[in-house]
Image 1: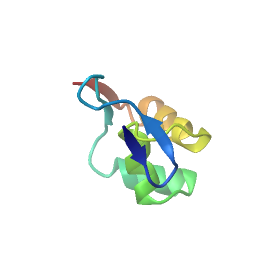
Image 2: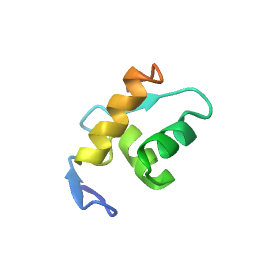
Image 3: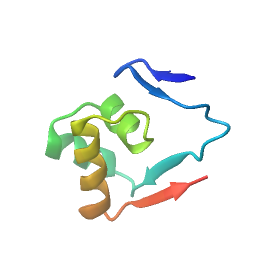
Image 4: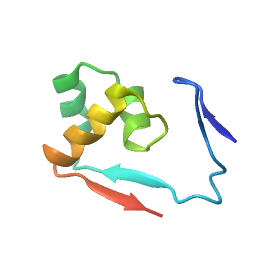
Length: 74
């Protein structure tokens, strides 16, 4: 069981479920931080699907729609 220490969100075993992340261009994280007023750890956790809060969903939506991010599953 993996626990995101910042947001206390539980995830399943990382070896049995597919891992997801959003890939964005260089400098995109700084754009997200400026546009939404969040910190780097929040952006990193949101793009790596480590947490599922309202702000994390907004970050992922902004990354996909505005920055043309790609969702990768591995």
